[in-house]
Image (cartoon, rainbow, N blue to C red; front, side, top):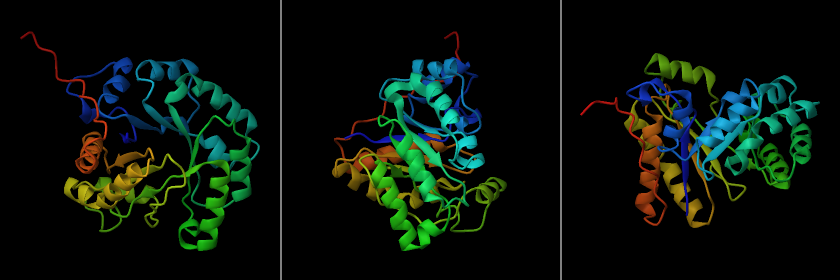
Length: 277
């Protein structure tokens, strides 16, 4: 059994006591967590040499869930994107087996399932895909839910839930929470896995106790998935993400308390300032 946990980024000002050069940031992060969301690729296709650096800094079993560029998902809305997709897949090829899934995050207004089916069907078969939808119809209308699941299951793709129920359970208590609520979707929690590789995005609050209390349903679900032989990946978010790296490790530890045979996370690389003594 192996559980993968991670955050929305691999560097944060609050995560180190001394500045780290770019070539050490991901390597240090990967000693804390064994997965990461590739959000930066949403804004631009990275240079191949940049991706080669990501591969050098991580072990082969580290998991990247890499988001498709917005030109594909939001600007072109999955239509007429062959050239952009080819360029993107070429750029991220150096990740090799580290590329756990291509993450198709769709706009909140997107309901075009034929376009999604065409995109998934046109990808090389060795790529695993995971889709995040935000339109309320897929959460509120059973027929739309079933249609989306049918498209995903036909392609062997996973549905990524973004659980923000705790974030929206009470009014914002800080500017960071207010900003997070203005940008994140507010849809019901979904806990059904379609494949052997479920991926979850969980968003907590500034209050770590509330964040931990809110993820308890995911502890139960993750334990069940692992007992079923699945290999889940869980990403922990908070409004400012300052504590998300430590919280991801705490989530892993809580699951491991139920499953002592679960492989532990590595010991983090120290980032304390260097001293003479």
